[in-house]
Image 1 (cartoon, rainbow, N blue to C red):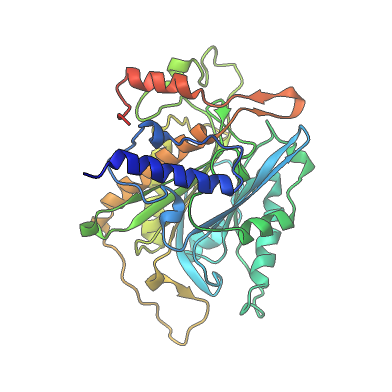
Image 2: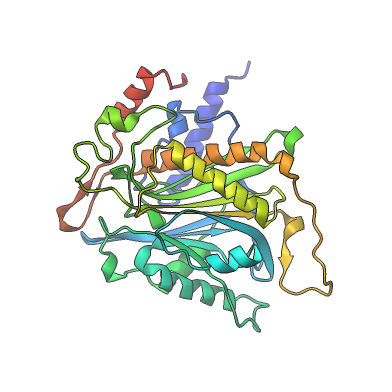
Amino acid sequence: MINRQLIRRVTVAMLLLTVLNCKNTDAQMMRARDYGIEIGILHTGSYNAITDVPGVKVGQVTLKEGDSVRTGVTAIVPHDGNIFQLKVPAGIFVGNGFGKLAGYTQVEELGNLETPVVLTNTLSVSTAVAAVIEHTLSQPGNEGVTSVNAVVGETNDARINDIRGRHITTEHVLEAIRKAAGGPVAEGSVGAGTGTVCFGFKGGIGTSSRVLPDKRGGYTVGVLVQTNYGGILQINGVPVGQELGRYSFRTTVNEYKEDGSCMIVVMTDAPLTSRNLKRLASRAFAGMMRTGASGSNGSGDYIIAVSTAEDLHIPYSSESMYEEWREIRNDEMDLLFQAVAEATEEAIINSLFAAETTKARNGMTVEALPVEKTLEILRKYNRLKDR
């Protein structure tokens, strides 16, 4: 008889070793699901990451210098080809517009993405745009290109990072794109999540995925988040923030507000055009709300949803005056909505479990989520699966 628990532990160990080999030395080594926190009803992909979507790759560069530089870059690449020449359908949902998402209006207008998606800090958006343009113009076949819609998102890491120093360079962004790879994705205080704070704890990069049953197409939905926002933390429906005594407005309405932002990138191989991708993106925001987000005034919350389905690739030039494709009917979207909400919720929780206590500028220390106390609370509410 096969010992499934042993197989699972060996598989997890192998994945963790791979993550270590990717130099993810700053991340904790256990994800939420490894502790028995199972969010939702659908199965995850092999890596429980955005890279479970075929062809999707992630690259990250982390900057830690002295006691004040804590920032970085995360790049998400939808397919191996020339993205400008073979664009992909995309839709964007804005939960709250207090942010800087470069490239938004053209995606909204035309319904496609023509570059990698890059995440960084607020004051480095222009640098990242310049780098993405440089990357695109340098691709073979793009010699005649004179307009590039670089899509770059951000969150503000000024509480931990010397953001005014603008330490991100174009080379850092180009390196993140070059390093993009499939497989396990480093989480926590890495890449664009190096200097972020979430629910008063150290935030960061998180990822998760869901796979639909074969009879519903067998499609994969993958999510990657950059968490930097406030509210009252809930994990799998449990009021963890309240139990820990750490949440927004706990003592007085005049206390410092934990404003911030959340960038959410959704990739799927389901054949969807921009209209239903925007609908899918809006359900990812529902997953964010399940974590206890308050959607505060200063929280810039953007969701970029992309379909990587090869049949929907949009050629830059074509001899035909028509676009022809087949996409999923509206009536068949429900399970994809469920999948993206679950994956977003778990990706956010993974970002918290992976992040470590960080000391930064001005002697500030941002504590990591206290894992053992959190697990005790989840046991109290009977929300842990036996492992």
